[in-house]
Every structure is written in structure tokens, then in C-alpha cells.
Length: 372
Image (cartoon, rainbow, N blue to C red; front, top):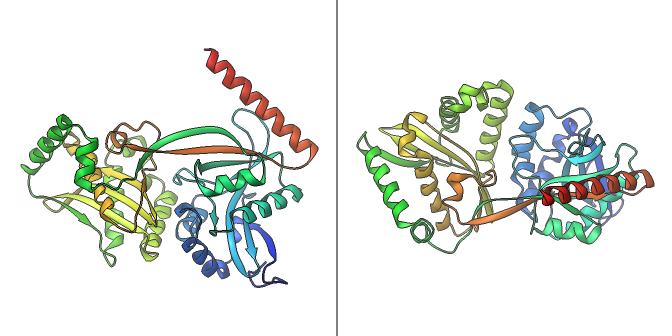
């Protein structure tokens, strides 16, 4: 379908296309949707998702659900058929994510949250390709999209995790002094001083017209020089992943979504940080540092420099995108963001049975874990 073939200006319609066949004719509507999203969802924006589709091999059954109000795109969500639900061999519908995407929030136009979920659920209820139930990974627990989903249909939270989150009215220096104890601040100052004894140190931010390709190459080289490179899991160890990363970062730059920082010693980058800006929020996406300088904690130093995001009037918060209980970032950022997975029943007796069986098994497992 195209986004102009609608009988009425206010008619709600749903399009389902193979994920690899999302037409370029949608690009303008896709970007407009991202600019007016109810929740920041950078991993669903065009500059990130198209390289993901091109290089990270979604399976053949992966689809893009798009919801339109007349000619206006009001929502997009990629979905796949997952073969298992945890350890339970039950096929079900799930939002599609990959290892390098840290939030599953769909793109939904602000003010259309309930209309989006109503249309998506109705489409899945009627689709013969949609088995069992809908499982959604990576939603913000207190976001408007989950609140709207709960108004449309039962949505059981089946897993939750907390990760470091930065949100404060304090200045960067005041935040640092408030949340980092004095003894730790003295140690950080000592490490920075010792690093400065090796040469001139500085922090740099890439300019809007800066050499993005050069910064990408430096980041990939630094990451590959450490434990990820030794373990074969660095971004550049897999050519497809390296291409994805390069195209996504270049796309973020063109879209005005990119912020990159680096800590340099005598002009040589020894730590780098990639942020995505998605007002009113932002996302600390990837970090890398040269392990030859690990004793000076370059990762901590660059994250302290990153506190300057608090000076930006257009940015209210930053999501760390980190795993729960990450020792480094949790010691710097005091706030936490709750990310959940939810399971939603679909209509039909067989589907409802599958939903109830899985939920009963989950509930029983949780009870047993508590007893232990």
C-alpha cells in the first residue's frame, strides 16, 4: 500500500509489508513521524532501521506494521514470529529487535497512541500468520505508549529491568559533586592528573560537518583493540555489523541525531562515546576505550565529560542503554529507568489458550524462585 490510497482523510488503515520491502516512498512520512513521536524511539527511526534491515538479517517472516490516518503515517512497528517464548516452544508474534538496538519502543505519532494499538491489535487478531500472542520487548514502564496499550487490552509485565538514567536540573558540576562522594572525586582527579603527565589531554565533540567517517574508523579501532576484539565480538569483527554501524552513525549525523565525544592524548583518541539525540531525550549508545590506558579510567573520564548534556536546554534526560547494575555508569548516574517486556493476548480460542498456558507457567516459575 502507499500512504495516499485512503478513501477518507480520517480513515485508519494498516499496512503489512515484508521488512526488507518497506518502500522508499515512505521515507518522508517516516521522518515526519519520528519528528512527532509520542516517545523518542531512535532505534525505529529510518536512519537506524534501514541499515539494521540491510545488514543484520531479519528472518524472512519479519514484517513492518504501519498504521495510517488517511494519508498520514501515525505508527510503525517491525514484528517477527519468534519460535520460542523463553524456554517454552510456542510460536508467537514479537517486536523485532537486534543485539545493537537497546529499546523496543515503536514509532507512534503523539496523540495517536490508542489508535495505533487498536489498529495493530485488530490487524493481528485477524491475521492468519499471527500465532498465539504478542510479546513486546523493551518498552518504557512509565511511558505513554505502555499506558495507552493497557487501556486497549490486557498487557502483562513479564520482566522488568532497571538501567542507569540521567535526569536532573543540576548543573554538570553540581550533579557530579552531589552524586559522587568526595573520596571518589579525589581519586578521579588523581587519575586525570596522572594521565595528563603522559601528554596533553583534551575532550572533543564532533562538529555537525565533521569527519564522521574518520571518527567511525577510530571508534571501531579502539573497540577492537580491547577485550571485545580478543573475543571476536567487536563491531568490526563482523563485516555486516561494521557496515551497519557505519551507515547508522552516518545516517544519525545527516539526521541531526548524532553526538560523538572523544578523549584524546596528544591528539590520539583513547576513549570515545556515541550518543543519539532524540529530543527531549538522548541515548548513550556505545562507548569504547583503549585498554592500554585502563589504569586511568578513560571510560569514567569521558562519561563525566558527558554530564555536560545537562547544560542543553533542549535535552531533559539521557538513557544509558546499559545493562542492569552496570558498575561504571551506575556509580555516576543516580537515576534509573525501568524497561519492561509485556505479553498481550490476541483473539481466538487457541491463541488465548497459548497465552494462558504461558502465563501460568511463568507465574509458577516465579513462585518457585521466591520459595528458594
